[in-house]
Image 1 (cartoon, rainbow, N blue to C red):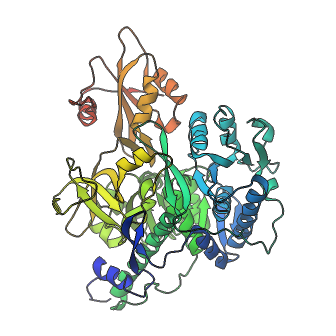
Image 2: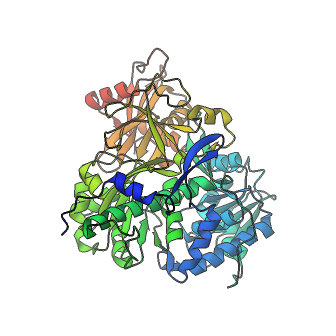
Image 3: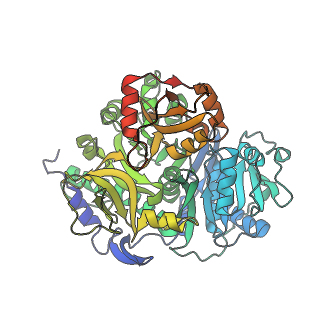
Length: 602
């Protein structure tokens, strides 16, 4: 063993970002703001797709008993890109939506739309019919890829889809008979076609269509929610997506560089030699999330890893797949990891192949680090922080640093600038007069090439959230003396239930639609495995009566099932509010959890 002191983060970062290296950093003006960027980043996702060709016949997508190689995927996506142009007239900048569960066709459709020049709109598969139609309409989607369940749901409320020209149906049941086109009725202006029929014959020599794609062109629209009660589309550029890919590459290279320096007594090649086996990961989170798409699927496509997909998350099925596929990594959100660790049959499965257990998207209990090390002797734990508006990663905490600081989400990637902003600050960018230091707590602002260009057709909301390139995250944080970020609280009114964002205002809007509800406030309720469940305090109108189950039934008609509160508190006095009329949720939540039992919804 070496007695050399471990290489610090600063030393490894300086080594890797030195001029002439893969991770050299340069300054570039983007939308009128100068930011640091990766000099060697791919220009576009089209270049990332081209990288995948080098992986040939290695297995890429695994779903149940299906396996698709990189070569098969490349040919299928290139062929489908031509079909989108030939059949539906897709042009550069047109929106192509994907509304389905995690299926191989999701990935093929994403890359086909990308290399055709389209902007991909990953739609939340758990949305109601009304929400699905809103997403397609608001984005101006021209073609939508849907599994049968989503297509049938959309057909229940098709008004507002005047711009939709085609819907491509995928057989989720894998029946071999193809999807039932007769179950979907959308109107004569929408052409319905089965995925396999649209794809048709795939030639071995097929190449992607010739489309010139610039780093600042739009690439994706991921929907998130805001104060209006309606989801808003965060528009990610090609540079945003490729920056996140480089961020992930950099973090991996830095970890290997530090490990190599410690083991060999000197800092060597950050690549650390070729891996002994193909990297393989369990995709346990939806591809319609920025994490699933940008932080899992795209890096796997680029690096030649294997992506093992699940129809829906089940901890025992996850253990079976870890053993069967010799998976090297899994994670996604903390609740996924905890459910696997807590499974009563954990010890029956061979999980010795796991080398990495990483997660983000929700608060993680510090004790989870110890539990991961206990269950996976070779597994390096990792926790990160990012938002849809930052194209996934901003910070990452892994390995020995995470063990040492389990309550931190880690330091930022070197192309990002971070600032802690006091609540009363009115400036558009951080000024030199702002207090700094490890004890300063405030809203976290982020600037970098991974910050989205704005919200789709929402200039006013964009201007409130992004000022001079700085994204106001809405999260309360502090940065310690080593540069590690600690998320203290969430200023945004959001509950994170098992990794799913539940935006309180959406649920409150829907609750107010019930004639018996006079006032309501929605907030998070601690849960041992999900992180949080959804709670609601309700004040009824005089002379009315309603039960928790009746309110839950009402809500299911308006919002996705995971957004329906699990706990209701009925109050006969008004909600506490500040002078501006805003409900004091923190105070209310503490009082209700301490004093009165809730009425559960079934």
